[in-house]
Length: 158
Image (cartoon, rainbow, N blue to C red):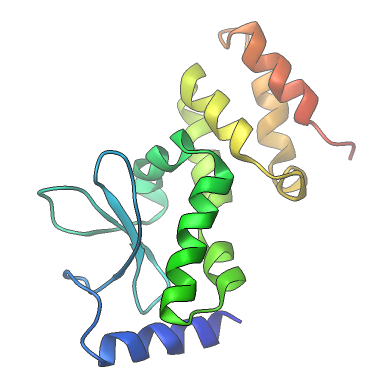
């Protein structure tokens, strides 16, 4: 449950763990050395090298795009390892990642490279939620044919 996750993160912060302002628990370090974490309000945080931690909201969620360059299992495994190390509920932590908002933001940018990565990152259980957006990719004449083809294979029946 999300409330249990929030309580446990608050306990971690009460012990003096976590870092930055806003205070966050680093969960994964990406290839650029950018770190993604979560705060006590269960908001995802981006801590880029040499920059202050940034709370991720809908207007800047596209900044989490680097996660898409990793295989989904690699990303989830890294987050899960951190969850285990801190005694956090693994599934709740994984489920808190704003995948739907991130994929919508990336698809809205109409860039073929990131669109392909975003589509490839999706789990079968996530496809229905994004069906309308995926259908739009299949109809985007400016999108390369292989990316449109990938989108076509991901469209689930209504």
